[in-house]
Length: 309
Image (cartoon, rainbow, N blue to C red; front, side, top):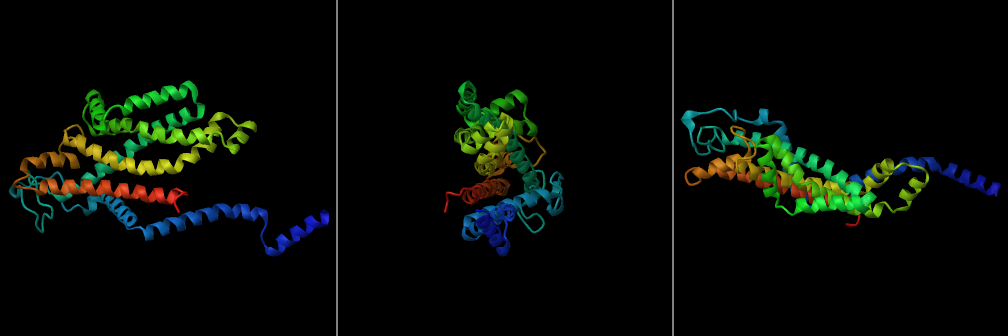
């Protein structure tokens, strides 16, 4: 037996590969495999290319708004009121002579901010509640599930309006309201996989070895729901942008003179017959932003879901 083991060690030494090297190389191979799969999906899918391009343009536009914006979005040009699109004002001007293109560019900052922060609120609270509900079960699961059911019983915009009626109309309160509305979506996405993952052998082994429940729950169980959470977060950002535009359209979101896309649509409807560009360009920005994040979510689902061939 000793001679046999020595022979195996010599063979592995001749091949230049040890078991430790194999263990160290495995994460690198997994990373390379993920990158190659993501790149293949991106090259093969036109919708993925469109989604990545639209989201990249929107984020870049929000970051570089002070640089790429041709005019001050709040500056009045009294002599240029309701001017049609031209070389100096590519998207025209509004009823106060403000440049519509600059206001659309700066409006991307508000949309991105609301999308990221509101989804972060929903992800943190909803994900934690779903994790506790799935891991502990019993009465904890029942109470949390009933809370989710109550929130789900209300339409998204109606519940957001109720929250804003209590907190008051402002951009900060819009992010809080949208975050509260999206909590059940993340909670239910987490709860289902946790119910099955907590009974896996490696989870049971960690309990037997004396690991406390916080370590088991956050280190061993939570990574199993990382992929669906990433996909849902991307799609939720698009819904948050759409919800913010609806609330701003109703006058409950960003307050004038902030250049929010929804409020621009609301003010532009008064001049739809004589200055249609006031509604066309903000509406087109909302459509492209929502479409981009939805397509990006589909692409991430294809990349992160190993069951898709």
